[in-house]
Image (tube, rainbow, N blue to C red; front, side, top):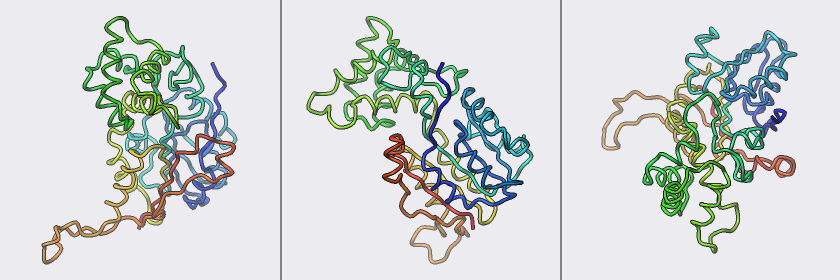
Length: 312
């Protein structure tokens, strides 16, 4: 088993966006290795409080160790950030001063071949679970889902042009024997995409991303999460969200737009009857991206986009 290691993405930009203060209460939805959480606690000393969640037991253990110097000021719950309402109730909090959501997969999860997140490990098992006690795995998806459903997942979550061809070849392969490894799936993807389209980014990336999203239900309820978590901010509190692909970013952008929008009545109404008022001010009209310097030492920040909003 690898030692848990993860480089937080855009740490300075995230901290600056949250406008941290001593005594504030903050929520880190994916504690990972504790990189962002450490900075939150350090910059809100001596009395700032942090509530964090994660589904990965190894991440929770690593973060608990890293944050130990702030003992008494933080609590980490094994939970999906989408269940923050339950976590807040257990922690005895109602409103928060800031929230950070990082939708990325940690470096440790990608590099640990036993987790099966990467196409670069040919003999890795088809797992991809962030919560290793969950039932659904990538192997189950590929070996039991109908061809049409596999194609839908690859097209919708991976924006894969050749989704139908890949799905068709997955079904043909499993008729002979079940898929067991990342290498088997990667080979099917390569053989399904015409050679002239295998350029630029590795052709397997989109399909592996799509499969991971399906296994972990990453987009399920994401829009409602952004709405409800943002509404838990105190006036002047901020939410900062890191996304790593266009689907996530689009959902966050739309949720922020909904929260910032005033009247939602149809244009032909003579007067407003909905009574809706803006709930937030969007701080980032365009998302923040990683600096050239960060890209040099943390290549996984390449696709990251940071969007920030403030409760009004």
